[in-house]
Image 1 (spheres, rainbow, N blue to C red):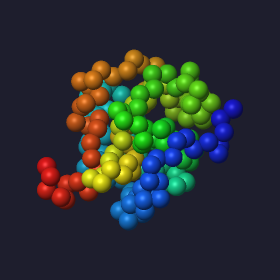
Image 2 (cartoon, rainbow, N blue to C red):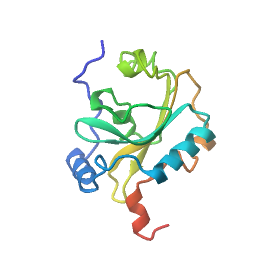
Image 3 (cartoon, one colour):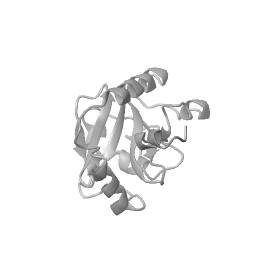
Length: 167
């Protein structure tokens, strides 16, 4: 049975990570047009029916941009992102219905029926992992090859990097 109190691994520096999420108001401003374009491109390039950028706070997973997904948030304990955030390289789950971490998750057993998941952490300049860029499929898949996993939309830094001139 899926445990509602199971929150997955806690990212390093969780207090500082949450403080940064709060400082940047990431969970309070709704959809972001630039991120929407990134998510659409990622879904198209990787032939995924669902793609999104999610940010974790201490209770919820928020979708700042999404395609193919009709919800704006999920409880943190249902989030695959909890596992992707501390994971390097990007986390890939080829069939969530057989993975012990996820097989009883309501997002696997119910709608949207997640089978394949790939999530790359979004990291600030100072190493805080705030969320992830993810793709989902409702069918199992083999892992993405290295070339696709390194797609510009599959890994990257969060928006605060754009302000430091380190392009």
